[in-house]
Length: 136
Figure 1 (cartoon, rainbow, N blue to C red):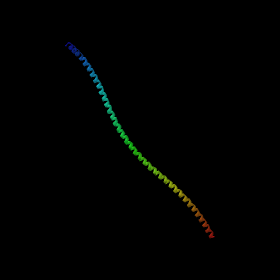
Figure 2: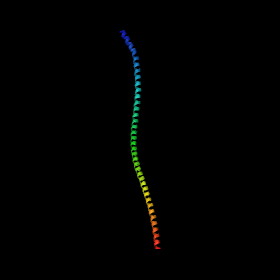
Figure 3: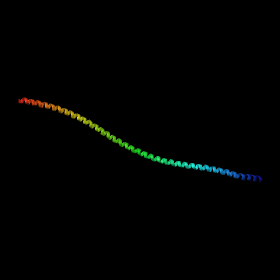
Figure 4: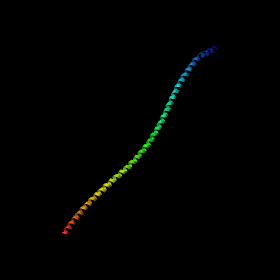
């Protein structure tokens, strides 16, 4: 019984110390838990911030894609206009060639007509000379 009392007395004396040690451990764990909760809150805030940034980037990406499609449409339109202008320029060049050809032909006809006129004038002069000779 004395031994049991001594053991119980020893346990009773150790109880406050063990209790204090456990309380220290609990405070330490609570401090770690609080620290981890703060880290989790920061990480959640970062996740929210990154989610918001992702939404903004997605919106920007959609806007850029729409602008690219718009610009591609404008490029196709400009290319069509360029083709029309090139065709018009070709037609204009062909018209100039035809005019030059027509001008050359007209000049040739003019030269021919002048030659014929000179020949007719010479013939008229000769006929007038003959007429003058016949009148004499």
